[in-house]
Image (tube, rainbow, N blue to C red; front, side):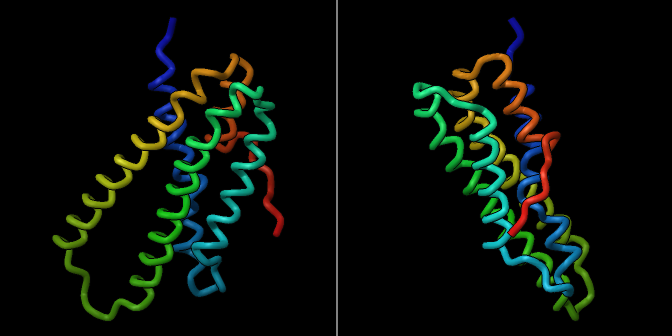
Length: 152
């Protein structure tokens, strides 16, 4: 039997970049970009749609809150960070300190890795309770393969 952890971890990594939407925040700062709260709200809608698509049983439902909470926390954290970074870039007047930038990027990657680990840990009980079809749907939802426009 294959170990689902590498697949789950990879899927979670993809989900972070999709659900947190840092690139959109960076690119849209001057264009009335969404706030961190708006980005987190959009991610919450996607999480709710994911739950709906999974058709969880009552036993599986017990494992949902920890996963959803971890994903929501991660989304809010990275949305806030994206807004902060975009704002700092827009307001920067001093020349870029390359060594500081390298150090900041390293710290961000450490934090991101820790967030992925926390999400993977929170996902394990839910993922283990899913059947084959639900696992496929779970992976597709996290990786964005079932993307639908989110209307406000």
